[in-house]
Image (cartoon, rainbow, N blue to C red; front, side, top):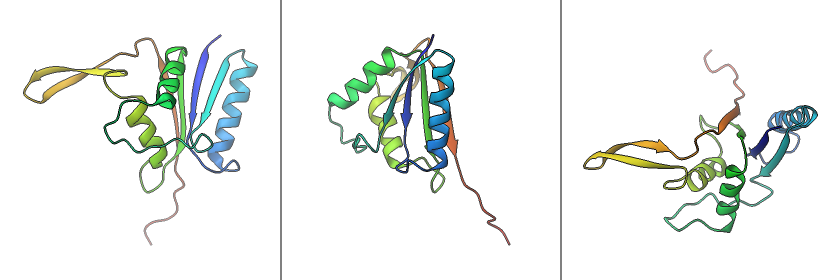
Length: 134
């Protein structure tokens, strides 16, 4: 049995993204997995990062990730990007030094070293495309 932490980033419970979320949860639970779903909009997650230390909500999400085997992210693509609430969640929750640290090479240059070893991630991003060119 896997422990799955699902992060959902869409405001509409009748959206295609909601269908993806509901189908994923149902299927995972039918297969015996435990799914802990966080709905960023219903939680009123504040995506604005101003250099502050992690608040209790961010720390709670980090603890849920620590306790999980799999992280699932479900969000739409709007204007070629994920919604700000999802991008802010990534910036605040998956931030250094908790999720990764930098190995300094010289000056301000380096590369990230992940701290979430053994975790798997599944990302569902949905974009609605219509004809752009005539």
